[in-house]
Image 1 (tube, one colour):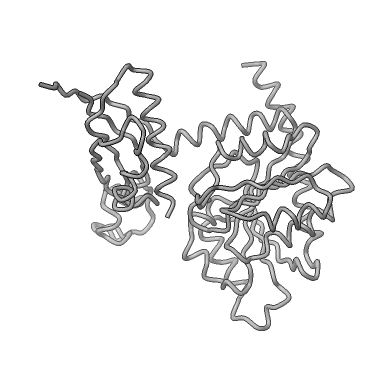
Image 2: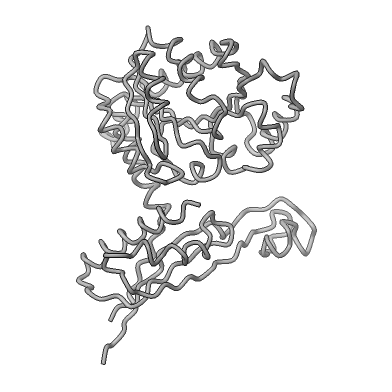
Length: 113
Length: 234
């Protein structure tokens, strides 16, 4: 629901970055989105063409890499995927965990030409 | 033929906001202005609670209010009748405020000499929790008709707030709302958080809430001095 506003912010950040680094033409923008992030990849893709209109990123491609939601089991130190195992450690069945990844929302890189 | 090259940016969009929020907090400390970010669902009684709160505090401190809404200025009109300095922020479709928008709002309000600013965030329990506005403290209102299961549905919101108001306590008898059950659920997410039952309509509990604010404003002013000392020392 808030993706458009966020993507507009991303576009501005990338434009600033490009200007500072003398990049004039961008082919692809690569984002990394955690599986537990409140940003939904599908919505980002849908609003991307609107957000880049009349910016340096107009007509660029968008690539999204989804990062897994991994946690560390506090009882046995096993790292496991929280979504696949519904928040319960597959090896010792413990449910006290420390989240390691999954909340990210990163501008990873641009492919410039 | 074009040659393509990959340029790494590795910038976290949320972290960028977090940085701006920290800068804003520093600025607020220096200006001795306490900013309270007030969040809730639509219809929980944020504006009515604010009117009561301002009435309770306006004789002892100067108060400003930033009303954030997607559109309209009905809330700003209501608040302006209390005599507090108020500014309406239109988020233009955005469902939350970020640190940058908050900063612009504070500039528009002009906080020079203002002790306490309320930021009435957009009515929404999801996105406002994701974005640090730069506020000194975060508060949320949960109203009785919304149900005591909200901490289960919106854990992030409950994990980032510093105090929770339970509003519309006067209609408790008509709803299936168990205050103790709610407190247990909240404690699982954030232990030791203060939960204050209020009724913005009857005024019940507003005195306790006003006391909480008094204490926090005082602490904020004190942190101003110690932090500045710390900075000079560093």
